[in-house]
Image (cartoon, rainbow, N blue to C red; front, side, top):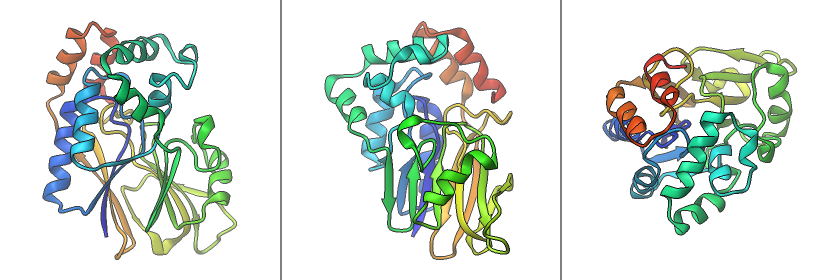
Length: 244
């Protein structure tokens, strides 16, 4: 089966439209989101509608949980907090309920999905190192798990040549034959932070055991203008051009 995995969308409608079109041309069979579908961006309701229209399977991210009032908004930085509070006013009760009911993890036929970590998904911890990935790699009961949260593409894995060691890779292509278990951070659709402002989209061919990440151009100025017009913090618009 050919999957497309979408990292943190953050209500960036223009980027989402671009990657969905890219996925359509690639003839994917299943669309998956690693969560944080809202927050930061200014098109939350339209984003959810598009996800429903394309039958995207979604796990809950921390911004999704905060919008659904399951996390104290005070733990977020001021810009993120302002966006969350604004987003709550833009979504209907049914949309907020949908965010609240999203699962923290998913077991799909060929992979697992979580937002931040697989071991403790409810904590929304960050995986910035191989050490911080160990608990999730130990807990995995599938060959590969897709995550997001940091907005930076990276793979943490147990190499087949030495399954007791945790390694990492910044390569944009991965052959699962080379690993026993792998955690693949697919980056971000709506707010990349690896200094590449293009939207990221990951593909997974389960038959070939191959995973790769591609970047997609989109009209950043259009989305930045939407953020400014909504009265959200200027920094949320500016950072889109920089990929930070």
